Image (cartoon, rainbow, N blue to C red; front, side, top):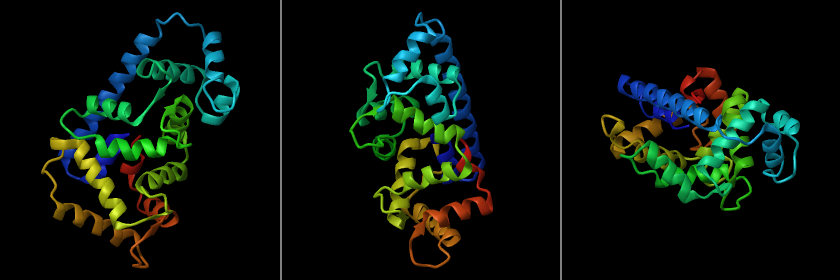
Amino acid sequence: MSWYHAALLSGDRPSYRFIDSCKRFSRRLSTGIYRVVRRRPTSDAQLDVLLSRCFQHSRSIDEIVKCTRFTKAEIRLLYRSFKQLCPGGSVNEERLRSIYIQFFPQGNAARYARYLFAIIDRNRKGTCTFDDYIFTLSILCRGTIDEKLRWIFRFYDIHGEGILTRDDLGEIIRSLYDLLGPSVQPVADERHIQRHINEIFHGIDNMRNEQITVEDFINYCKRVRIKAFLMF
C-alpha cells in the first residue's frame, strides 16, 4: 500500500521510478509466496474449515467470497500467506512495523505502522486477525473508487473526527517521509511539507474553513482524477 503514497509526496520522475520498483517488488513477493504455499500439503477442504473459524462470526467459504469479492482460490492463497507471516493467527502493531522495516530498511516505519494498524484493527482489539486483513484488502483491491477513497480518508483522519485538518495531513505526510527515508529525493524539510499541505487545502477546501470532509475529499479526487490515489 505504500507506493501509491509515494506518488502523493512528489510528482517528479525519481518518485515514479521508486513506485515502479515497489510494484515490481510486490509482484516478485506475491510470486514467491505462491511458489511456497502451493507446495503445502493442506487440502482445500481443510483450509475451508480453518477459514470459517477465522472470522468474528463463523462464515462458509462461499459467504467469504461474497463479502470480500475474492475467488475461493485467492482467499485460500491469502490465508496461507497470512499464516506464513503470522503463524499465531494475528499481528500486533510491533509485528506490522517489523514487516514494513523489511520493505523499507532505510526508513523509520514507527509512525506509519501506528496509523496503518489503527485503521486495519477494526474492532480496536490491539491485534489484527485474518478477517481484518482480508476485509482491508477487499476494499483496496476490489472496492469501488468511492470505497477506496473513503478508506484513504479514514487513514488520513488519524483522530477519527470525520474531517481532515492541516495537522492530520501533516502527521501522515511526515510518517510517509519517515517510512521512505532517503528513497525520496530531494529530502523534504518542514517548509516543503507545509507547501504540500497548502496545495492540498487550496485544491479541496473551497469554503476556506480549514477542514476537509469525506465528501469534499472524494469529489475532489474524482473530479481531478488523481490516479496516484488508486495505485493499489
